Length: 89
Image (cartoon, rainbow, N blue to C red):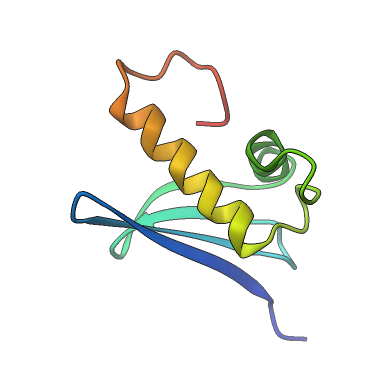
């Protein structure tokens, strides 16, 4: 059985971030170019997606739109005054 990967990419001021979620393993990764900057496994990957996507889908079955929202959230937390431990990052 082939792995189903859902992905989304966004550019933030010339920096392209890419999120990918593998449905068979539940692995969530955020990459900058080829460099993995965040990697989460279930149940943490599901919690990260569900906390951002709300009721659009469940954590284990995100859509491309959900991953796009996840990238927005990740970047906004990185641009802030620092990560305080709140949220999935």
